[in-house]
Amino acid sequence: MPAICKLARQRLHWLGLSVCLLTLAPEAAHSQDMREVRRTVRYLTSRHLHGRGYTHHGDQRAAAFLARQFKSLGLVPFKSAAAYTQPFPLTVNTFPGRLAVTVDGHKLQPGQDFILAPESAGGRFTASVVYFDSLALGQEGARQQFLAQPLQAVALVLTQPDYQRIQAQPLLAQKLGEARALVILVPGKLTASLAPRQVAQPKLLVAAPAWPHAARQITLVLDACLQENYRTQNVLGYIPGTARLDSLLVVTAHYDHLGELGRHHFFPGANDNASGTSMLLQLARHLSQPSHRLRYTVVFIGFSGEEAGLLGSRYFTAHPLFPLDKVRFLLNLDLVGTGDTGATVVNGTLHPKEYQLLQQLNTGPASVGPLSARGRAANSDHFPFSEAGVPAFFLYTRGGIAAYHDVDDRAETLPLTRYNELFQLLSQFLTHLAH
Image (cartoon, rainbow, N blue to C red; front, side, top):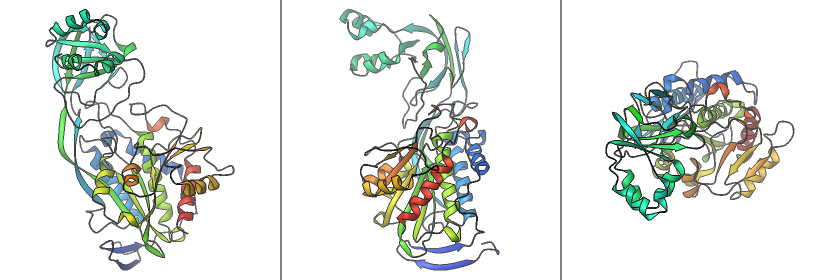
C-alpha cells in the first residue's frame, strides 16, 4: 500500500471482504484526455497483445494491463478474487503458428484474401483443386455423381451460398467432410469468429475476387491448436459507495478479441472492443475521484471469453462475486468507437424508465445523436445478467467505419466520433441512477 495514500477501512460482510479506499488527486469534472484514450486503444490493439486472444498469452497480457489500471485508480479488489481477477476455463480453437496459402504459385494474403473457418484443422500439403457442381443441390444425377466422387486427396472449392445450402442435406454435408481441405469462396466481407472445437480438415474462407480463375493446385501450411480448458480470467474491482454500500451499479466491457491469424497476423479489435474497454477505464478514473464518487457502490468488470460465446459473463453470473440481486443497474459497453449516426440501446424497450432517463440526458450540442431502443438480444455480455434478472443496457454506437471481426479494425482508423459525448452521457446516467 503506497505511503502517500490515505487508507479508510470498513467491513462489508455481504461481500466478504475488506474495503481500502485510496484518496486520489482530483481532476476536472468530466474532462477527457483523448490522447490518453488513444494510448489505451493503441496498446490494446498492439502486436504485443496478439489480438487479445488465447495464444502467446494475449488475453493474459490484456488482463494484467486492466488489473494495473484498476490498482492505479484505487479500485478495490474483491476478497474472493486473486489480484483483481476471476479465473475460469474455456476451450477454443487457435492458429498460433505457421500460415501460408499458395494457389497456382500465387500467394494469398492472410486477413485480406482469406481467413480461416474458426473450427479449421491444420495441415501441410499440396493438393489438386476440384470445384463443386451446384447442380448436385437439385438434380439427382449430379447429386449421385458428386457422392461417388473421391475427395480424400483434393481441395474442394465451393461458394459460400452453396456451402450453406448443403448443410440442410445431411448426405452432401457428410460428403464435404471427406475432402482433404475445403475452400469456401465468400462473395462479401470476410468476417472471423471463434469456435470451441476443431474438425478433421482445414477450411479456408477466401474472398471470391482473390481466388485465381480456374485455379488447379493449392499448397497449404497451417498450424492449428485446440486449446482445451485454457485458463483465462475476468478482471474486476469496485469503488465503494458513499452512502449505500450494498446498492450496486455495474459497468462492463469485454477486453478479449479474436487473437491471431497465424504467427504474423492478428485481429486488432479497436472498435470491438478496445473502445469499450477504454471507456470503462475512463468512467472508473472519473468516478474514483473523491468529488465524483457516487452514493452507490460502482463495480467495473472486464470480461474475457465474450468472442467465444459470452463465456466470461456466463461464468460470472453462475459464480458471482457479489449478490446479483443487489445490482440496481448494469451498463455494458461494446463497439463504442464510432457514433456518426447515434447509438443503440439493447434492452431499451425492456426498461423504459431508464431509457427515458438516457433520452432526457442526451440533449443539446453535447449529445451522442439519436438513440434507438432495441429489445432483448444475446449479442454481448449484458445478456447473461439480463437472463439472471439483472436490469441491464448494452449500448453501442452506430455509423462510421465498417470494420468488424477483421484485420482492418485498427486503432489508427478508429474515429471515436462521439466518444467524449458518450462519456458525458454515461457518467451523468450513472450519477442520476445513484440518487
